Amino acid sequence: MDNQLEIIIKDKIREKGKITFAEFMDTALYYPELGYYQKENPFGEQGSFYTAVNASSSFGRSIASGFVQVFESTGIEQNICEMGAGSGYLTKDILDYYKQEFPEIYSNLSYIIIEKSEYLIQRQGELLKEHADAGKVVWTDFEKFADFNGIFFSNELVDAFPVHRIINIDGEYKELYVINHNNELQFYPDKISTPEIEEYMQQAGVKLNNKQIGDINIDALNWIKTLGSKISKGFVITIDYGFEAEQLYSDFRVDGTVTCYFKHKQNNDFFERIGYQDITAFVDFSGLEIYGKEYGLETLSFVPQWLFLIQCGILNEMEKAETDLQRTAIKSLIVPEGGFGTNFHVLVQTKNVKVPKDFVFNKSSFETFDTLSRNF
Image 1 (spheres, rainbow, N blue to C red):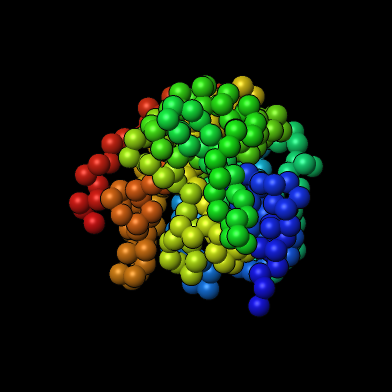
Image 2: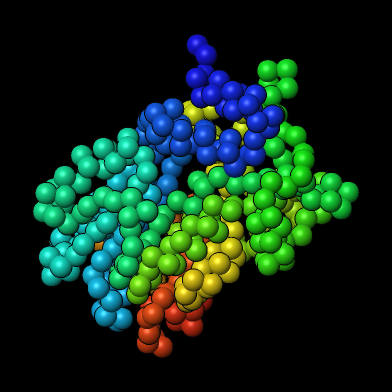
């Protein structure tokens, strides 16, 4: 059976001669009804990849606990906006936690979801019906989202933004386009498609060795700028796998970080199973910091996810765990050298908020837990 999305992509290439990898990736993931995130549930056992949300409900409960400390310490409004809620289970874990543990917050809380996939909105609506019926959760578009006071956060969102692939060829930077050669999709180096790429590389000090590939996420840069203009007061918390530029574009990352996941197995067959596998790239957190600051978002801290979760109180979840299976699942979230602890980081940015010196997410308040995993 012909892959309809592959045919559409080849038609685009026939019209334009070539397309950027960013356009290819965007089409493969988000094309209406055919893109990977538009037609099926990619999360959990039935999907292509596992997230921290699938590992344990303690992930969401811990984040919710950390947000309580934010509300109590800063006096911002009790509003939460989650962009890219995926399966909806993280939202449910957070709202269930407030309803059970902090009913006073739950009664005042407004929870907004920004989601572009109609399929996922439907799934989320079914899962969150109890909270939606109670008027606690609503859906909106990013374009309509504005003048927000509260906590804006995302979990494994930015890694799914399409990236441009850049390569150094004998000292000259080229962009890797997608072409159709003998009815097969493949890469082809040519002039960089937009000056925004070179502008960012210069700002962040990104340098690639000869034949090294780097993935530049222009969509993420535009997203953080737009987001900064939409926040009037509050926090932006970005949870994802990735690093700051210095480490992300290190010499050893010769082939960049773009990869695919199909039924829980990683591969680099970018042009296979189009629309049926995830395509993702490590997040460049430096870009979010640099461009966020231009629009009023000040970096409060950038830490590994495991340390962030400990500050949120996940060890309390460990103490409450009733089975070894539950404890193992929680451990996978916080052991630095394994599970979700190696590549995942959290960037906390603020706008128009004064935080106390002992605030939970202050960089200075993060203690060293390097020996913690030895106690598990």
